[in-house]
Image (cartoon, rainbow, N blue to C red; front, top):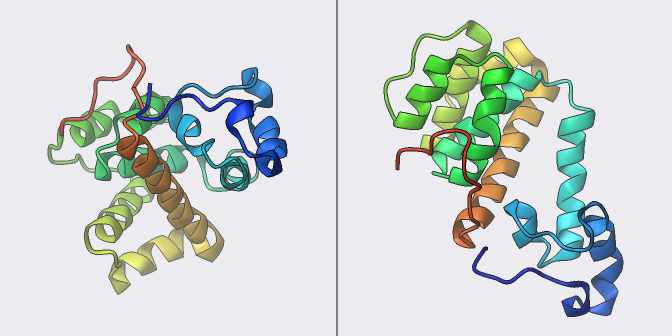
Length: 184
């Protein structure tokens, strides 16, 4: 359980109940785990944020492998065990090498990667470490992905950083089993 209790419909101000109902419809009226269990404290905000995640899942042409890589790079940068748990196995399933995932998890030197993966790692590393990106790194990802997909990649990293901040601040529990946790 997170630092805040599970939100129930009767706790939500009337003007936000429609958003609450919309967001909890598939979970039988409550969201008890994950980032959603925190974000439902502000039902309308969560509803708006979910438009973005649904875009990534259903409409974005950014390859799923690259999306999962962006998610685990963000999880590592933010030391977010929950996002790591949710996406490390998926990254492996999408073709990200075990060697890369394990090295990222354990804060060890990363192996050589295929070009499309390496430029994402370089981009994410620079952006997270310096809040900027060099001209050479930007050109490499822009040349490979184009402006639309590079914008989506950057926004996805920001979105998962938003989730990580909520999960970490509210101390959302990580399910048991699955991937080994991040070394922090």
